[in-house]
Image 1 (cartoon, rainbow, N blue to C red):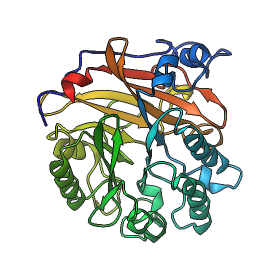
Image 2 (cartoon, rainbow, N blue to C red):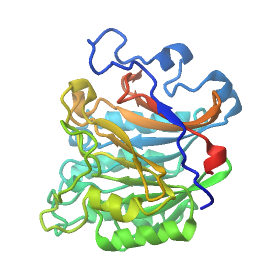
Image 3 (cartoon, rainbow, N blue to C red):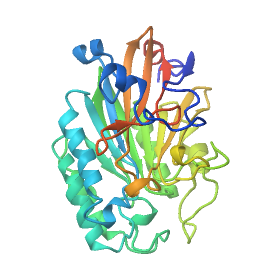
Image 4 (cartoon, helix red, strand yellow):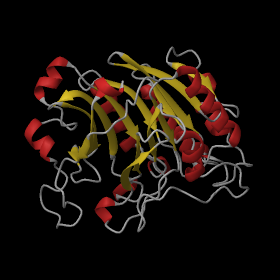
Length: 352
C-alpha cells in the first residue's frame, strides 16, 4: 500500500445536529437531502448525471422479519429497491450483517429469508454473514449451522466471478468488487470469528493489498457507553474472538482495512437512535478506520425496513466523501440526524 492514503482532513455530519435531542416533528423521517434533492441517498443531480460515484448497500439484522410472512415483506422491499436502483445509484455491492433468522432451527424462517434474498442473485455481488441467531441453538457454535451452509455456503457463490474464497470453516467469505477505477476486497466474517478465520482473513488482505471492508455480526456496542467494542464472548463455549480482539489483531495492524460494518447491538437511551452508532478509530499507521453499527430489530415491525447505503462521492465540494444514509423502502422515508445521516470527508487522490 502506497503512502498514508487514509489521512483525514476533517469530518462533519449532514442533517440536523441536534436531531437526537429535539422533539419529533412532521419531518422527522425526511432528511434535508431527500427534500432538496428528491433521492434517498442525497446525491446531487450533477453526480447522478455523471455516475461519478458508487454505493454499497447494507442490510442490518433481518431476524424479526423472518418470523412471519407479513414481516418478510420488509426484506423483499429492500432487495427490490436494490435491484430497481442498482443503475441509478451505482450499487456495486450489498452486504448482510448477520442474524438472518431469529431461530436457527426453524426451517420455515430460513425458507422465508432465502426466498427474499435470492432476488439479489444476478443483480449485484453480495455477502451474507452468519450471526449468533443463525446457529440451531443461539450463541452455541457446537450446534448445527447446516441451514446457513446449505443455503448460503460456498456452493451458492462459487461460480460467481466476484466471489473469491471461503474461510476454513465455511462460514466466512471473501469477495472482490470493482468501483470507479479501483478494486475492493470485502471480507464477511462469521459471528465472533475464530482464530483460524482471523488468520485466513489476514492472509487475504496480504495477498490482495486492496482497500478492504469487513462485515461481521458483532463488533460495536450501542447503549449508555457508545464506542465500546464487544469485549466479552457471548458464545457459550468461548469459541471465537470478540470485537475488541478482532480490531486489535486483524484491523489495527492492517492499513488496507478502512471500514468495519456490524449489527447485533440494538440498545440506546433514545428510541429514535437505538441501534445506530459510528466512530473513527486509528490503526497502526495513525490512519482512520470507520466503524459503523446498524441494527433496527427493536423498531416497529422488527425494523420497518430500515437499511443503510454507503455512497462514495469523489471530489464533492472540493473533497471526496463516504456518505452514509438510512432509508426504508417499505416506508419510502429517510431517517434524519447524525446517527443516521452522516459523512466522512476524504481526499482519495492522496489516499488511493
